Length: 144
Image (cartoon, rainbow, N blue to C red):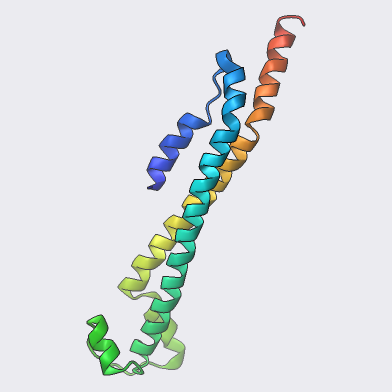
């Protein structure tokens, strides 16, 4: 599920229908469970991407330092890297590698999805307090 799809879905689910507060309060556990399950799935994806990035950075370190075997190079479809790079410059080459940048961007988006879902779960958990406040406001305005 993309971040945009999540935002659109959450936008609908966090709204409180003031005309049906009883139904809204009954939906809270279902909504909470729905977003908690999505959050857990997205956290697993985050961890997998993060692990792939660590492995890719290690492989790129081997590649740029000239320590990768020819078999590994062939397996990945990479050409031998012929420049001699100083040890202190390796990180610069690794961090600017297109594959590393692409995977880092995926990790960033996944991190934002997880953070967004954590916020949605909190909003839904607090929805009962918003419903209670709405009920109190209605009582107050009606003179009860």
